[in-house]
Length: 431
Image 1: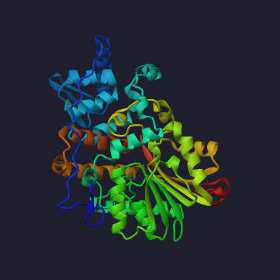
Image 2: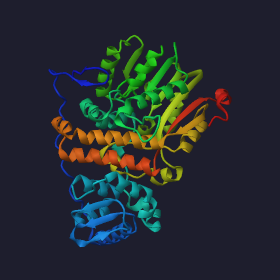
Image 3: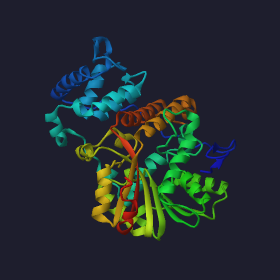
Image 4: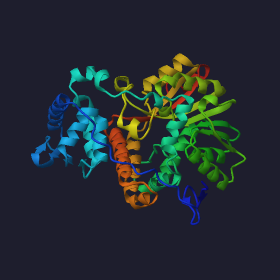
């Protein structure tokens, strides 16, 4: 595919072929479920919903809940059967199928995220391993598996992402000067985030910088404008293609090299390493290798700046083997670490130490809100790219689902500074 730009991050070109969307995404069929499981599921679902601060209209059967954000279930039998069979995967698939809806899905999902540990009775939570779906072996983040997983999401279409991202084409949490924020503030907030990471890594003239996870190249461009020499790695062919165009448009091809390369295959020695929301795609079993790679590639006295989506440690342990709706439809192979995991993995497997850690979860909720609103505003453009109604409902649910996670505090996002053990004293007490 040939890609041109009309200014910073704007994808287009009147004579350029538009990337075709995926094949039509059929609404998922209602899964099989035994009569006993369906009956028990119906009882548990209705009891859980009736105790939540929601207004849940169950078709013509009446309303459940204690008042709050409203959701309407148009097909209670299918809704309950899906959840009984597949848990929260079924809940998300029911939305894709149009069996329930809400005027404010984020508000509904925020309530559910805030009460997630109480939705399933404690005895069933202890038996999670017996009823929760397991991750497919094909999703594991081997070198080949990682390429497949990345391409399933990031190679959908650069034009798709351009419909809801700001002109910087930055697909990670921004950091705003104040909250709440408006859409005209997003690009500046993304630059603020990037500058915070580059400052954390002490990137300046002559810095040899490695970026793991290119995105569409904005961080690499901004680092090169500081005078750094940048090597940036990606597994997405679509992202690499557009990043190369954007780097060339910025006149920085002599300072930025964009490689199609797995982090495990990287070579060289770098004064600074930056990686933004890429560790989530590594997989828990590969976290030691990921941090060992950072340690191997970092020059003496160097600094590593990471931005990572995190979840509470105990919740991470409870769900680390669970196959979720997000895995099935959005990020195959994904796994969120906790702050504790980042610190302990670095300490146990490398000479690196976390010396700073700052959280910005409320800023991610705002970032996702702005993306979701823009995605809704441009639904017709997304459709024109070939993405059908089921796909658009899927991505609406995905963006709302994530926004609710940050709004409820179930998820957070942190920036970490790591240095070698000998350099850790410099940042002692700054956390």
